Length: 133
Image (cartoon, rainbow, N blue to C red; front, top):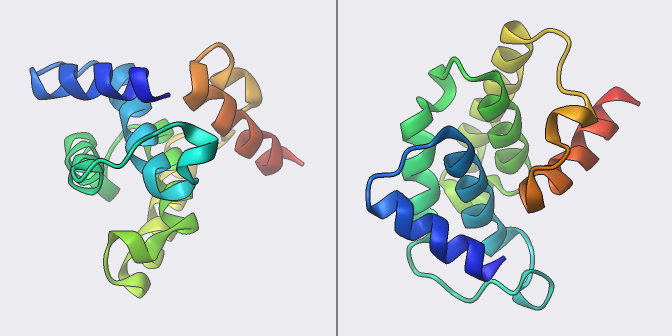
């Protein structure tokens, strides 16, 4: 994960705004506080929170029209709202984002939507499976 994170972060800083890269980088920035280093291999990075927020803003935040971004970001927020700022504000935002995601894509996301997409895909396949059971 560390090598992928560094490559994607460098590309982001160089102006790469490829959607798939941005989603994966959003996930990897989040993994810095979601899981311990001994599980992820991600070393401390003082920029990870600002990077997460930057990508969040790039997608349009809760006003985004990208259903997948809304789905995955709302899950990230729900799991660790206190890392992002005011807990009540971020929990409410995550709820609105989840609802907006379903409004844009009423069928939700199957596990197939995340297959073959690296660490990002593996992680969200688990959540997509949980959403459909």
